[in-house]
Image (cartoon, rainbow over all chains, first blue to last red; front, side, top):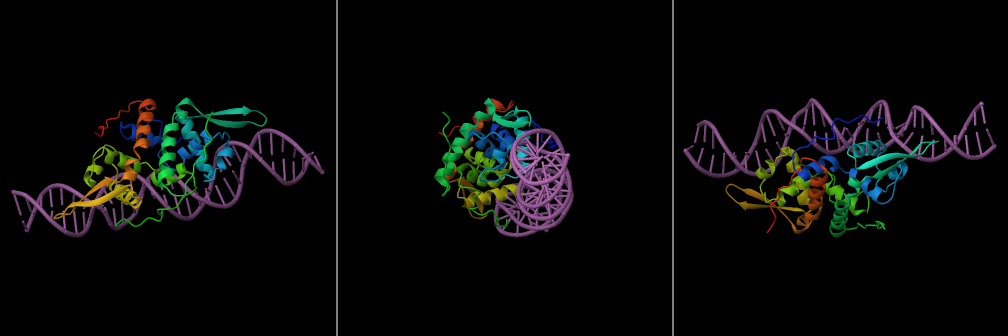
Length: 121
Length: 121
DNA sequence: CCCACTGACTTGTTAATTGCAAGTAAGTGA
DNA sequence: TCACTTACTTGCAATTAACAAGTCAGTGGG
């Protein structure tokens, strides 16, 4: 079990919404996991196989952080053997605009990048 | 002098624009500095006095990273004594939408946050 | 029953980053 | 000369991240 990290659900540096958002998502992996969930991945192993190859302990840690913040929900979709799926909550899905603006900025300003997101229909 | 960190200008984890954007801005401070520059702060000491109190060595490091990536430009605005101002480049100003979507998400989902950005007129 | 295999993590260890606190250096003003 | 300001550096201790390996339930095959 990944220990309940002390950077608790509410340790805000300030009342600024940008700072507070960064307190939750300000690292190199969280938004990448969310990108993959947007792209339709649902299981741990699918998330693990992203092209960026997130380290497994970090993936586990980010998933608990994101579920703690109710951005992601973890639920078993079968028993025998138990298998889990991770899905975005409404709150998580509303991160879409952040991701989209990052895609736009990245594609425009970082040479060699190319988005390949399947439009949600 | 802050040493030219090896996370060079082009060390991309993948061709994904989100991942590549996070390679540059994926940490707790970079976007906060950019927020302050958007808010009209220009000097090192102004940036240092943000409510989140960014550690001075981190601020110095982020400023060189951001200038390396041509998101920020550093220029002296007076001699005797030399004083510098940091300003956003066009590329940096185009990060606006990312910041704006973070403000929107933060205000909606993180209780106790309140934006106070002066609209650029 | 035994063995290999998969999914979903955990543990251990080393490496890299952060976060203070303190220090430096040029220049100003009294 | 002294105190003060701006703009950083430097030195560690303390976190975090990265990588490799290990665990554990369950399944399918021989």
